[in-house]
Image (cartoon, rainbow, N blue to C red; front, side, top):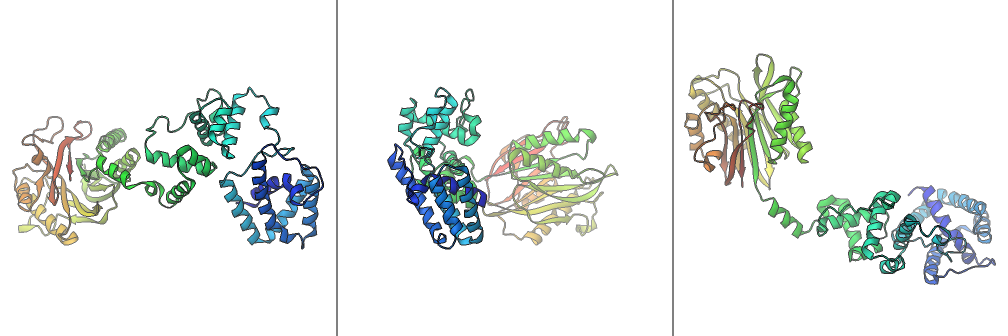
Length: 505
């Protein structure tokens, strides 16, 4: 707490009590609510006890306090007392900390009974327009925050406790604007499920941090103040996760079972000026499926174009709230101009990202027509290792080239990541039909065609204008079950390929 706030708070609080604390002979009126006054006086004495050791050493402080006691409502006396108090606090760090801690604790306990020139003998509304609804609501908030029982406040203002709490919440959230006539004093929870325990806990924390005494919040939410402090501490340390219970986690898991969603899509290079809208549409449709893993082919990165898979990942991040990362691997030039490659994208942190060469050391000295690489990475999901790779196999008329590339890919994945992964996923544009050598080889190595495992027929992905052949796949190997698969992103304006989507559990 800054010194200025502390000084104004303490001096304003102590001034009305000076005649009592220093036993000044001036007339001392006791307010109607004697119990509240005596409680406040006790707190003032506690503060004064911290200052008394300085009275013997600082005559100026003693004189200023006596002047304040003789003239408790004089602005000059108040200013002189504040000046002397500042000198002490600035020269004594220990005292400053003790007073600051004390004041913060007192504020949290609702310190602040109404002490006017006659020590609170009359309500402040008595000298104002009693027909002013805004003033009435302010008085309701003030009384609630100073500890008056909510039932008593509601009775005095001829309303109900629920309305009182709504006024209080609106003031806490929006200030005076929230309780103006015509503002409908809306509660932020009004359009949500009021039985949602997480939202209720968040509201309790918000009220506490907005300055509402814990006792007041406890009354509204039928709990004890220690529970509110505990919630606030856990929220400070761990954010929303810290206030979840085991029941909340079970409910979350019921709505979000342990599944992994995978998509594969050939982005078809660049479409020029239409790319911005095209990528936005792609990201919107992908986001609707909340994929954990995305793989892309014909990704452009260069020649004045920002990496296209990263553009889509950024849009998906803004749409879903999950942070999608990308790993891009260059292959060759698209249309002899644009750097084209493949990419993997994940909403989990990627470990050991790799670019795997599918051009050299192929069996029987085979070579692709164009340079080809695979992008691969490892992620951890539900505590399990997942390996995934994006491929765009060669378009050679010789099917043995793609077979050789698949063989090289599996050896490289085994060398780079080992064989202990829960699941390995190879997806992308294979440039080959499902009864080809390359697909047969992958099946022999334990991979399952995700789409075909869920559908006996169909699944053609190329060309998107009138699909008549199937060359895009999601191949899965591991201790998982393929739960669902379908074709997505079918609009020809997006690509000459249709996308593939699979769900495994």
